Image (cartoon, rainbow, N blue to C red; front, side, top):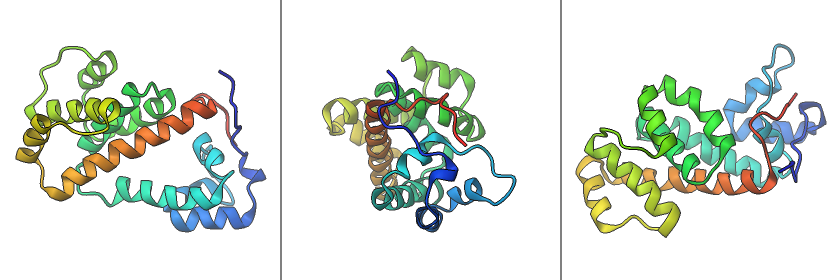
Length: 186
């Protein structure tokens, strides 16, 4: 599928939109630096097309990435499993490096990718089942919830739901707009 909504290039984003993005999502700051800015992720250029939604969305997403109670490995496990379940190549490709840094082993990633047999710890198995249930049934089943509740407190349980829901929603947007992880940005 070709992109249905093209991301804006860095130089096509109005200064007021850049200011809104920077204020709501500090991670975006580096992409708008005067010099030495790395390539801008296409998702940022896509979201810049709707700054009224992009700012709050990025702020919320940033809170999940930087201010959550889940450890980075657990969060990235959930994100990769959600990306695989929703067929979001963009999310998968963007989060592979983050998952590696967070300590998700290559064999864990391969098992998620293939949805294959793997010797998961009980908490990880329940997290992966929760992703399947949330994406397919829109609710974590009682048996899965019980196992999760044995390993996570209420804040972490809520965050599991928010991480999966956020990346499920993002996958729908990216899959529907045709944003490609390989898309060039500037």
